[in-house]
Length: 393
Image (cartoon, rainbow, N blue to C red; front, side, top):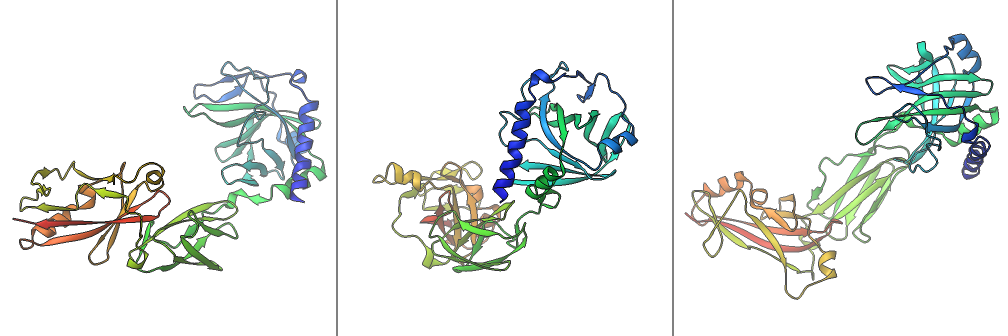
């Protein structure tokens, strides 16, 4: 039913497009003021009484829109003809102060409406606060002509258009209202109770609540087989089957991402020992200088650890398991999530200054050990490498 109604509406608009060619349009001309706002070169005032008589209480369907050129002339091809991701707005001026605009929003995507509380001002403008919804150029019988703001270009230039509308029949207005039924003025973010993202847990299972959504929702993992998901009401339970999962939650308008890792040793990967790090062990002295096993100094501020593939691995398997992040898990099972840069992790990120300070305040020979767990772009922990830093006076 929904598809049939939408198809019918689109066919009506298409037929209007075919019957009203640009050859039949008597294009007005426009100017731009010092703020880049388009204005008609001449405007016949339309009284509020005339506006209420001819416009209020009716639905208005889009026929054509022509972009206004910098010189004030209009382009002759319909603005929406080859435009992807956007479409024209239909209007219902339901009272002397309330206006509904029906539109398709590609970002959600959704067919819906927004309600504006407007005032009819001088210069035939419908104002929602300080914002001009549109400027009425003329209304003759069933036809209405408007000056509208179409958007903003990437460089910041406003785009204006000259639009032609035709009064809807009662049935056409009813069909539009049924099809564009989502209230876009009340769109909510899809939010969850997860406080940290990525979320690092100590076991295999975790759970969270969906705090707000636009109706029913579903969560799906980016990698099949990474977890099991069960939902009851707004409560979601997740059981990891391997270490690392990226969940995307969807409702009819919005989405959100929840990333989960674990320090559970039973989830540590096996059989994907593809890489080595530059160092498995380094030392630090009382001056807080870092040294490699061969004795050369490593720059704490500018040095980094780098993964290198083992000789027996080349080609597609390395692209499949390209590390983009890691978990640094200490001997107490506490983990930090760290982003990598082209297979590198800086010493400043791996060993924060407070860690260096703590170690060098201890006794000679004191050490800290880590498991460095490599992570793929789809949030799979695929290899664990050892790392140790020892204090030597």
